[in-house]
Image 1 (cartoon, rainbow, N blue to C red):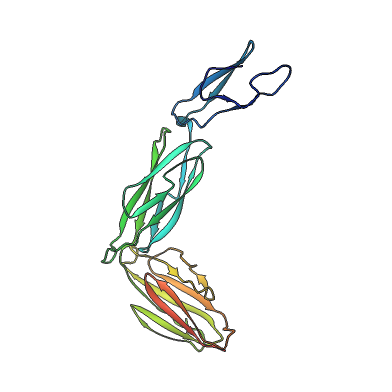
Image 2 (image 1 turned 45 degrees about the horizontal axis):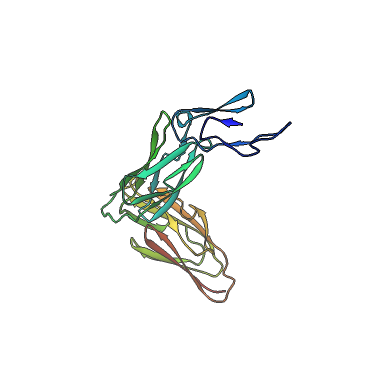
Length: 255
């Protein structure tokens, strides 16, 4: 058996007699054009053609994201046929993406640093560039990160469960709730309206978020709905919700 291309390899058997199956292997073709090789068995010659990168097709999702000023993580997805190569790079030191290269359909993780810029609506923008050898050459993903915002939250009319009280200002607040729990509705007010993205975060799993969910990115003014289940313990418990760095402390009495 003879091969005329170094990128083709015989995966056994290299020789024999009578009927048999011959197996070949070949690596990913990282070059733009297609390549062709042949193998011969006696007087019979067969041709193998492998497509190059210029025939690959790609799709990214999402192609733009808006995130809060917090240290944040997210994902992009590259959709591409098996063997189609791509690479990534960020144009800003505060935005990082991994892995920086790969083949085929892959999830790329990104990490954004905390945005220290102050002043209402002081957002910043970075680009993660995806590059490949197909005719489109690549595509950019834009990441917009909110700067410092003016954010306040206050109970909506009738938004406190029975027996609950609230005290707070634009820096934070505290809810005192009865052991019976109940549903709560807060208004979240932002300035500037469309220039502020915010999330609700909490590690207290006994607080049930109806909307938005934990770490769901919101834009501008919105509503916060959560439910406190009945406290099964005679001991009071404490939870903290954080919105754009501002705490909403929950103090629930014991039964």
